[in-house]
Length: 142
Ligand SMILES: [Zn+2]
Image 1 (tube, rainbow, N blue to C red):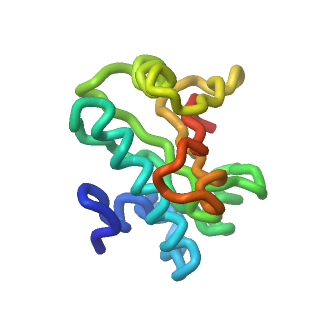
Image 2: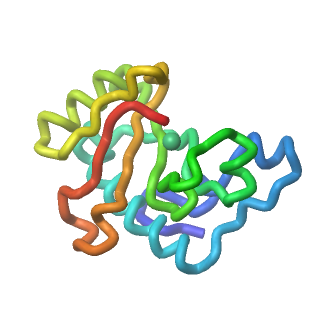
């Protein structure tokens, strides 16, 4: 199911870990509407990076999946308000985060204990604002 010009719901809900563990990771309607906000921000990031494809490593996580992968209980992933992504044709995650920072987005610094293997978009601030606002955070993934 398409939720924005370039993103499908399945890209945000697919999880190799869920498939491996046989866990259900199908979002409900409230989560889907949150994921639509995230997708709208991802479209802006995609444009900003020169219309290059973004690949999502981790989007929605059911509570059960989140526990299985050791995520914190309050993770924005469980609300469908976070996604970890890469844009290999643009550069490394650090280069991607830097480019987004220069664009005026608020950037959350990379988590010092976590290897920065993808960028984390946290759109919790967008839920109460319009999807076009700059309340999202991008930084190292956790
Ligand atoms: Zn994450």
